[in-house]
Each structure stands twice: as C-alpha cells, then as structure tokens.
Length: 216
Image (tube, rainbow, N blue to C red; front, side, top):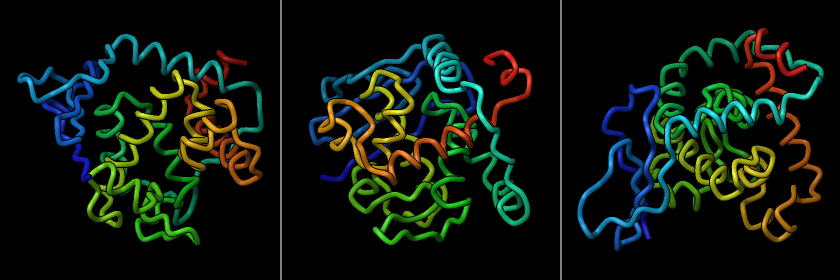
C-alpha cells in the first residue's frame, strides 16, 4: 500500500506543533495544523515546546566527551552546501535537529545524491526501496523526495523508541524490527554499532562550540 506524506501547511515556521495522521487507505500525513474529517486518524501530536525539549535532552544524552569528528571538507563540503536549505526545511517539518539530518546524510552518502549501497539503498539518506515506498518516495535519487522520506522515517523511529536517539539510529541502519527483536537494544551487529557511533560523532561535530562545552 502506497504511503504519502503531506506537505506542511507552513514549513517555514520554526516553532510549530507536528501532527501525524493516517487515513483509511493507510496514507500518512505530517502537518503543522490539525486535519479535519472522519477519514483522518490522529496517530500522534508533538508539541513544539516538547520537541525542542526532547532535542536538548538528546544532545545532553549523547554528547559525552569524545573525539570531535572533523567537519566535512573538500568535495563533501561543497556538496553539503547544495542541500543546506533542503535539510533545514525538513528538519523544521519533522521536528528534528538540522545537525542530526546532516550527520545521517554525511554517514550514509557523504552528500552524494546518486549513491547506491551494496544492499540497494539509494540517494542522500540511503533509502531502501521498501522504505521509500512506505514514505511515498517515488524517486530516491531526487534529493527533495529522498530527504523528505528519510526525515519522516527518522521522526517515526524517534517516536517509536521514546526519543532514544541511539535506538532510532540503530533502527535506521538495521531496521526497527531488529531493534525490537533484540529487546529494544542496539543489535549486536558490528556494522550497526559502528554506524551509530559514527553518526553520533558527526552529530557532535555539528554542535556549536558553546553547546559542546556545556555538556562536558
């Protein structure tokens, strides 16, 4: 069944509540305003203040003192600049930190929109075909569709795992089923454990110096 993602009514609003609805056909809608009509079933509602608080808690939970990853340079830095606005817009849309999306994209594809993994994941956020279909992405090599679908998936994973960023990242890499199978813990897969550490290091590198100092 095809899943669609509705565009936000005002994606440029920084502090906006986020609603997730599902209709009778199984289509998914993310919006910053309530949808009316009996066809829409509210799955969750995240208040803007709560989203901001959860983001701060995630930063404090994962930013233990560590070796700060170097910022992207050279061709990676140039490619990154092409997607700054797109990443910021989807971060606002789904109540995510732009730095988190940057960290995931850097780890997944190094900002290469044409990247394809050996497992068949595609595009900037390396969406598997089933995940792309689930989130209404018809062309994973289209950065606009890819980042939207990947951000929506990451938002769902955070909600599924009670805002535990480590588990959400493990689910993004290995699938939410693997995290559930292993008792809501990071699966004992070397690839997944390395991936979680890498993304967290990249996310740490995205934080302004004043935030990094405050959590030491």
